[in-house]
Amino acid sequence: MPNAIVQASAEGMPKFDRATIIAEAWSIYRRDTRMSRPTFAKDRRKLFARCLRTAWAWAKQRITDSLKTLQQRAAERVETLTVELMRIDARPWKMATLADRRTIEAEIDALRGAIQ
Image 1 (cartoon, rainbow, N blue to C red):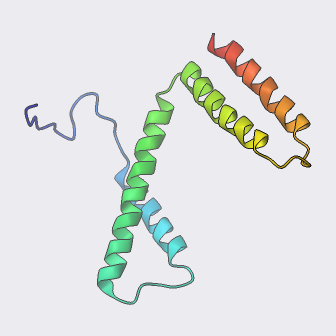
Image 2 (image 1 turned 180 degrees about the vertical axis):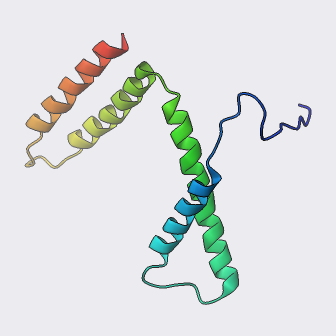
């Protein structure tokens, strides 16, 4: 695969609001350092770098989520509800599971109708 250079202003590339991403990274940094802050500058830079990577990942995830169709969203929700059904089945015997199970199964049936 050749190393093709793609310009940042190329057609079809999603546009990111970098100021918002930086602001989000700083809010993550402040949230993570609310109780204690790393002593050394090197550690603070590493922590902020991690916060910046997280903010970029969230921005990219928001873009991909906005491009999904209703059928794709419904299919993902069915997958998560199926996992939740497995968690309900793994509950101890004396815990009530019937109401939760019926609620989730009803939602899965409604979503499967939307998928098809």
